[in-house]
Structure formats: C-alpha cells, structure tokens
Image (cartoon, rainbow, N blue to C red; front, side, top):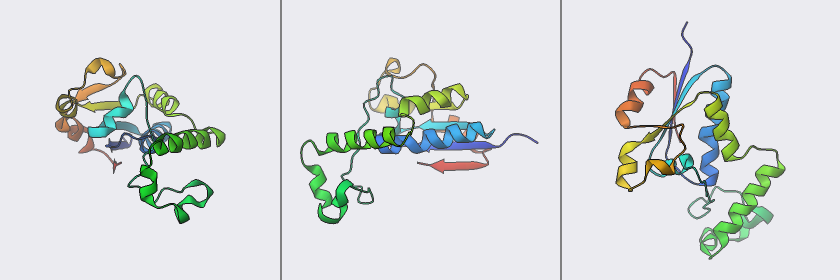
Length: 159
C-alpha cells in the first residue's frame, strides 16, 4: 500500500491564515502523509525569508475579539489606524501564552518533515517578486506542477 498524500493550496498571507497550512501539513507529515503545499497569490508571503505577517481583522467578522469587543466594537472600527498592529501583537501574545509554535517554527517543522513547498511562479512574476526574497527550501512551479501531485492526492484542502 502506498502512503497517503495531502495537497494544500495556501492563498492567504496574514498571520492568522498562516497557521492552518503549516499546522495541517506538519501534522499530516508526522502521520506519514506525503504532503505538498502550493502557495499562490498572497499565500506566497508565508515563504518569504523575512516574515512580517499581520492580522487583518477588517473583513473578518468571525474573529473573536478581546474584552468582548466583537459585541460592541463594529468591524469598521478595526480600520482605525494602528488597530492592525494592536491585533497582531495580541494574537502573537495569545499564541505564545498558549504554547502554540510560531510560524517560523511551524515552517521549519514542515521543512524538516520534507513537506514539499511550491511557490507559484506565475504569482511571483505577476507581482514582480524576486526568488531571493524566499526561503531556499521552496521550489517554483505553476498550477500544472501542483495538479500533477494533487491529481493523485487522497486529501486536497484549499486554505
């Protein structure tokens, strides 16, 4: 019996959306799945050498807010200058206090577990990005590269 395969497409580049692909991929790899993540559009931010990920509460009404703010602070209030930095700091602190690994640590776990990290070449070209801005452990490819793998995957996730 061949090993199971997991294919993940990562499209978001904020701190809160960085956790799901790396947690799922590292867990799957630990369970013996062959795992590939395809990073496209804003998801490419997760492969940069220097991560500066932020939380964007704007447009995310499902985000639980501290001090019950979700009950009295309208979503539009999150657009106040400086609110994104405050929310990012609060999330980083909460993750640390709860013992959740950082994105850098989770990414390193994926690399150590031989999770295949594919950066979308079309997106890199589209946004005039440079390969040297990304970690060395990625490979570049397009949708066809990902579909070669995903077409045989047992589980496919879009994040």
